[in-house]
Length: 182
Ligand code: UDP
View 1 (cartoon, rainbow, N blue to C red):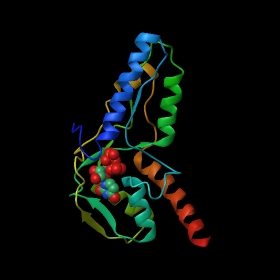
View 2 (view 1 turned 180 degrees about the vertical axis):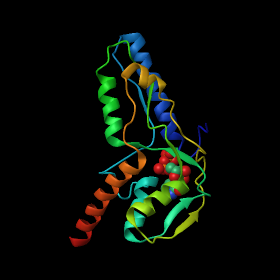
View 3 (view 1 turned 180 degrees about the horizontal axis):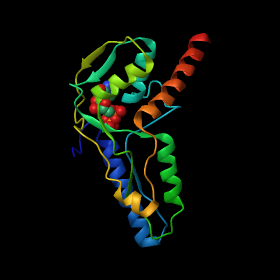
């Protein structure tokens, strides 16, 4: 962890929020639930969000170059939005003894190269893959251990990456057509 890097306010903000939640829980008995959300994607993401899934899909649909940062061997685990929401609803329905932190995410792990290949395949795009510098402090890997969510909530994600990407591509395809027509 780098507490003074350019993305540190995001990481440290989340850590600080968890600390305060647990202080209020202990001191004032506030009922709390702490979820740790891993990479999530799906329809209604913002096209300029900057996240890898929205970037690759928008680039592929527009026929622009697909920008892989670094060599693309870093991995992420992508959770489809409906699965995440289901996890939230189950967490909020638990008794006061369940506080978390509980990891919510899809453990299926993919490299950015694999993600780009799937997006190109689904869209049928002829976009080229280009490489850009890796941002500072970019993690090599992110993969949630969801055993607690499985035990405490009976939860596990059900939408495979390819299927979720298919739905997300359909959303962006319609969205970009509307924007172009307007
Ligand atoms: N990334 C990429 N091309 C992009 C946007 C992101 O290769 O156009 C990479 C980024 O460097 C990271 C991964 O994709 O290794 C996931 O990035 P994102 O910002 O979606 O999530 P996070 O880094 O917060 O896990």
